[in-house]
Length: 269
Image 1 (spheres, one colour):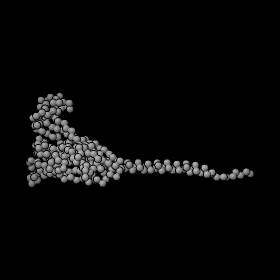
Image 2: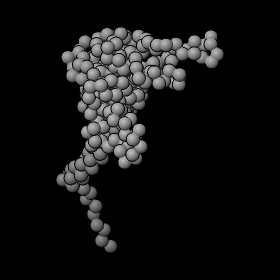
Image 3: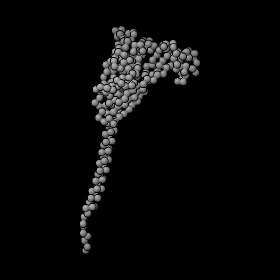
Image 4: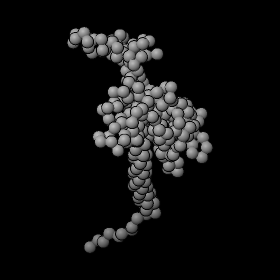
């Protein structure tokens, strides 16, 4: 009987086998590390998006309330015609300003944060106290610091004296400078005028075809001196931020806000 002699692997075959094995292992390691890096990036982006979304939601909810006066029907009509929180003369109207060498990175506004201040609860039922006067804690706002130790921090105003100066008032950080850097924050006010005098005249005429004002109706959307006008306003916000520990991870959010309280002027200047 013939028995075949086993000679094993040659050195060249062994080296080729080791090389193939090394290539397979390297490929598997590369895929594994890539998957881990991708997961880490997704986690960072998700965290940044959640943080920016939380900040945006705070701004949206608060700015939307600009001009709120009262829920009391006895005061509502007078307050609508002479809203102390939309007063240009008293520096309480909503405004967008430049701050800290930035452009349109600050918004100031006011609303009645505590309507109970204007009720006398010794009366039954509660009687309104007139006139409603804005308090210092009614003047609010948001701004982005661009210089100093708080550079990149979005701040919220807790109280102030005017809506024409972003350096005025008491401010506190809304974002943590150790975690997130806000690289851009801009506000823009969009305004649509409606001629209340024209609309009132059309309603009195009783013609249903002319009762409503279409966007392209220049007569309804033009305010001349002496006209009663209503101003519908929106605020556009653009917010961009990045992680402090990984500046490559960035996110931008954009939001358009409809101011719920329209500004009424009994006589346009």
